[in-house]
Length: 368
Length: 252
Image (cartoon, rainbow over all chains, first blue to last red; front, top):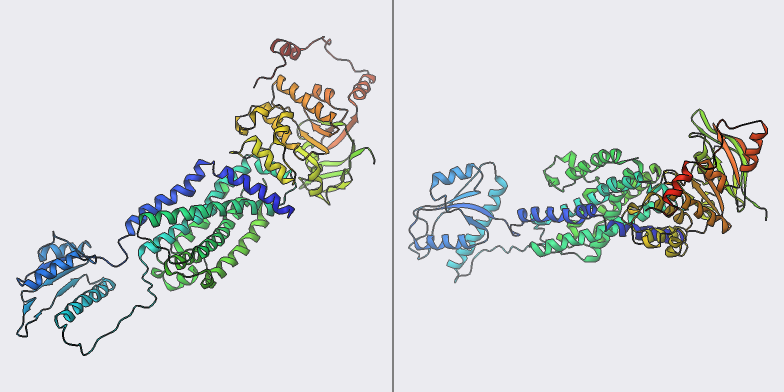
């Protein structure tokens, strides 16, 4: 109790001075928001897929002109008006400016003897882009099957497929981006704010002065940690608020799980910053070590590159890097609506790292 | 209760193969101002820091107000105040906020304004340490060392780098602290300061105490040996001229 009162008086003072430190404020609050606004704008193209296509209409039928109008009006397709002929469209496809070329042959939409229009749409896409073509084909299939069922609407269809979406894991790129950026901001708060700020206090002799008083090493570590976790919650809340306000972003999980998970994540990652800055005599020692620890984390944990693009052996390692469960957990809560109780594997990795890193931080701590 | 505040016996500090403090013995009485003098590198600061529980004791024993320093470092820290030679304060906090935090470290209620008044800094309560002059900084440092109402106050070269006015001002502060019954242990390079403030003086050289007595006795012992100043003693020196011309008022 007495020990915690000492910790609190430090944590209060540390937090006061944190909010007066303009450089720290910029990097903790403003910098992640700038990041979020830039990447959010790039990646918020609506939730569903979007295709840039050239539409070449060689048919004169009424159906085909209707079809062109409807396709252009949908969110899914963006029709490139400039690529009106086959040649220029193929050139654009080659440059990657188009996803596909849709060609309606002359006979497209001609009314058959049965009284209904019919036809075959030709789709050209880049050979290397198989994933895209599969999605495109699926989308077009569903477009035509709805047209078909409307045309033959009166009669009951002999066979139908009743497709129902199960637990949509339709994670948009924005979901990936937001959870990744929040994870990144927690990392930089935990590690970089320490390698600058804490070693600066050492250099100024402020820690020497603190050591004169009857406080123990763990109390200083905990007080600094409380300060950073408090700041971290505010920083994360601010980023989520901006994502909600400016982008088509929704949180499916509950706020309590999110807050708890943020606290645990910040506590864990702060341990790395504390170990480095606690050991280092000055910023010259702390800065390179901070980079050495945080850069692999940034690139291997799926903040900037999706983990599934990595080779399998690397993916196996990636799971045990402390930032990975942080980013995954944030995404599972925000995008998939999971609760903190569903995040056993993530919490296990975070918990293990927390124990290890605080043990190291305590062992290597130097007051001067 | 005895009138001894600190007992130091055989105090030793080694760095590798070199012994920087070589089995030092002395006692500090309650309520006195005890000075440790000596050239740079004599081991003064190391000796102080071992007594203050800031540095491990390699040999010997220190008992402060009945508490063994090596065994109960934190209990000792509770009842001492320390002004370090090379320490600083957190930036972005006002003097008042710093004192409140320091009081919290001792689980004591804070009286920042009283403390600041004691060292003539009440007007600077909302200022930060970086806005203070050298003398003000030292006075604040003393104020922060008094936050836990210590029984023993340690001052390591408190007047180094201060102008004559600020130095005199700090002397008055030390005398007022002594009047409250607080034991003071200090180091200094200024002999007139030691002569004026200290009840007893230990002179250290190369890790050993080579003389320990009151300033008067130390001077008498020297004169007994037939010492004579090479220069005629003047009735005033240049510092007296300086103070006469510029006054005792603080410039800050």
